[in-house]
Length: 172
Image 1: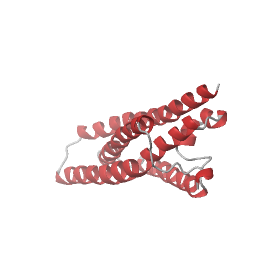
Image 2 (image 1 turned 135 degrees about the vertical axis):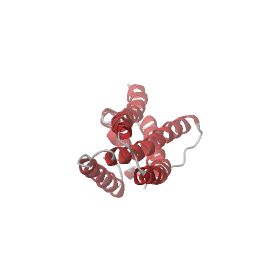
Image 3 (image 1 turned 90 degrees about the vertical axis):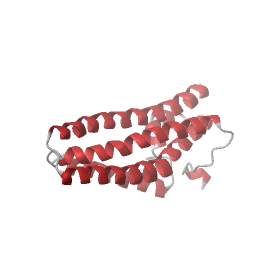
Image 4 (image 1 turned 30 degrees about the vertical axis):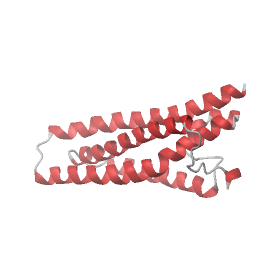
């Protein structure tokens, strides 16, 4: 039974996050491509290119590749090595650090999630083509993050050691 919680929890943890990111990329991608139905002038193209570069670096590289993705993979590996039914059932939330994490990790996870939800609500009121330009940059960052998550997860489960922090309370 431990094997079920171990493997199932790790797969569900990463798989649930992959599904979440894929869904967001799909929805944002549709809005982004709707923007191209409008006539772009130089301001639109400048913002599109600038925001694309900003989001791939800040969200994709710094946010996902340097922080979120390796931590999710490390927590999934921890879950596989320390089977727990509650952690396995809520594995996507476990892997994102919403519970059974250091106080700092939980606080950071809740603050970032609240900020993202707030930005999603605000951006939903932005008219096209500006909204599509924003969504294009965000989707690019999410695609980078999704690829990073898959690569870090493969590394976490195929390497002898995976030294990224898990931020679990018993390892601090």
